[in-house]
Length: 419
Image (tube, rainbow, N blue to C red):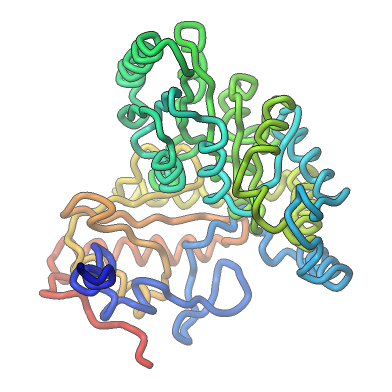
């Protein structure tokens, strides 16, 4: 019998194979200082484009005070136990009620984490005879939730309505053949890598043609899209057609936790059957009270969303004017597409950080095909015009170096943190 750990030592994985050179720099970097548009990395001041702090709430003085006051009043232990047993409070229920109203739904359930929450939601509502139809570019948390599903699942090409209908026909035929089960469609309000919105309105319009329920993960749309900030469904005028609306607090609210909203009878079922919440400690009181404050600010301070969009549009317009390919984004998420290998990409990242003081996330193979590079920039309400201009200059100059072959190296530079 083989030692189960043996294979881990022989194959570190597609990303882990680079850990000896990458750890602490390209992977698991440590940003220090107050959260904002400028932070320190390895002792140097950087303009940071890698934080999902969309509305700039992470260090807003009102948020910091609410968090501190709640921590002083309750500590991190309160309430003790899972919600169902001993961890429920009026504040937890108040937050659920206010979240439901904010996204125009009857009820909502709080969850400790977004990743865990949507996985467990899929597990709670889908049985072995049910079929799931989902977008090919769904987030990893959805894919991992699908792995828990004992029934069939069909994937449609990203935002491709023709292929969506093809998969719906397959799913419908299977349901009719087995004479049991239903169909759940899963997509995203905003796809966090490319920044394009899911085709919610078009999918919802097909409810008259096919029989299905719609679950939307709107982590990047909640608080950033729509007239009131209620997300992609509001922006597209189809919020009512979304049967289950899911989002995390980790983006626009700069916090921890998540929620699922929908019709009261369905949310009640999930509340009593979602294993990740039934068997997990309740969300700590300081987070609940802090999230109530953040939600209040989303409702009453539209200038935060306006500033976010002002910065996003300035950044995106500047990139396009300079000839950069930013794809089909119609949200603040700003991808920049380039050509090059992993080694070139890491050399370019080093130049951006060491010489231009720009810190942004980069995506390379195996996440995307070989020969491609994606920089993902996340504008926030905290960024300034100076941040944007410095970044545009840095990208223009480093792109010229990339095209001229200046970043061609034989191996990923060794920038690992030395201990």
